[in-house]
Image 1 (cartoon, rainbow, N blue to C red):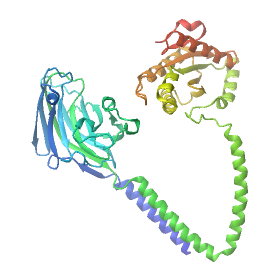
Image 2 (image 1 turned 30 degrees about the vertical axis):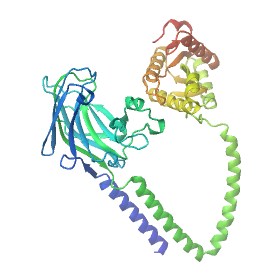
Image 3 (image 1 turned 90 degrees about the vertical axis):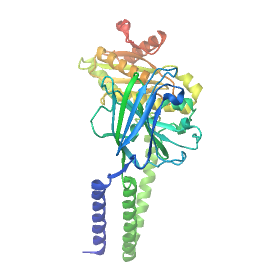
Image 4 (image 1 turned 120 degrees about the vertical axis):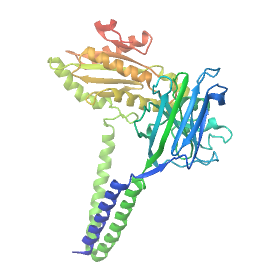
Length: 440
C-alpha cells in the first residue's frame, strides 16, 4: 500500500472515530445549580411596596418556597426564588455554550391544589445596558410555562427563551441588544405566573441544570477540516515533487478551467436577471410564476382546475418606512414573508408582486377555502410580534381564476384589495359577487 493510501486511510479512521465519539458523548456536559453552591433567595412584590410574603427553606438539594400573594396597591402580586450565581452582580456565568436547561420544579396553590403557570428567567448582565446598582437593567431572558406536579425533569431549549417586551420598552434597549443573551448570567429566577390569583403557594425546586456540548460541533468539524487540509497539502506537495510532469498538465488544465469559468461568469451575469427569487424577501418573483400561471390558466379554461388568488398588502407600510427607515422596512418585509410562509402549504406559491404587495396562488382551491386561508394569514400578521415593536396588519383581496385570463383574475383580486382598504383595512374582501362575504 502506498504512503498516500495509508495516510488517507488513517485520516478517515480518525474522522470516523471523532464523529462517533462526538455523537455518543459530545452532548453529555451537564452543569448543576444546587443550593450547596449558590445562594437561593425568596422574592416577592414587597420590594415594590406590595403586601405578599415569601420564605425559602433548603432541605438537602431541594429549595422549598412558601408564599402568600396578598392584595395591595401593587397591581401584579408575585413571589418566587432568585438564585444568585455570584456575589458580584457584574460577574456572572458564561452559559452561552449550553443549549438546554433542565428543570424539576413544582408549583401548587395550597388552597385549591391547582397547578398554575410560573415564570422562569435567566438574568444577564451586559455593561452596554446594565447597571450594578439597578437590578432592573439586568436582561430578562424568560419563558412562562405550566410545570405541573411530579412530572420530573422538563427540558427547555435556551433558544425558546425570549427577552421580555416590557423590559425592552422600560429600558429603551436598542435593537442590537434586544436578542436573548447568556454570556454573563448572574441570576436564575422563578416566579409565580402573570395571571395567578391571590392565596398561598408552595414551590419546590429539586433540580436546575444546564446541558451542553463538551466541544462545539463547528469547532470539532473545523478541526477535522484543518486536519484534512494540512494532510492533503502535505501529500499534494509530495506528489508534486515526484511528478513534475503532472504539474505541467495540471497548469494546462487550470488554464482551461479558468477560461471555462470566465465564460460561465459571463453567462451567469445574464442569468442573474432571470433569477426566480426576490433577492430581499426570498419570495418568488413575477418571472418565476409566469409559466406556471399560464399552464394553470389553460387548465382553468378547460374546467380542470381552479386557482385561488390572495392579493396581500401591508397596511400603512409607508408610515413604517418613514418612521423607522428603510432598513427596518426591509426587515419587516422579510419577516412578513416568513409569517405568510408559516401559514400557507408547501405547494402554494408566494410571489412578491411589488413593494409591499404580495400574491399567494393556490391551485385546486375553491373560494371558501381561499377565504379561510386569507383570514388565517390576516390573523397571524395581526398577532405577530414584529421587529419594530409596533402592531402591523394587512389587507387581502381574494379572487378565483376560472375561465378567464390570469391578468383579469389578478385585477379582480386587486379591486377586492382596494375595497378592503377602503372599508377600513385589516380585513379580507372577496372579489365580484362575493363582496358582501367579508371575513373580519
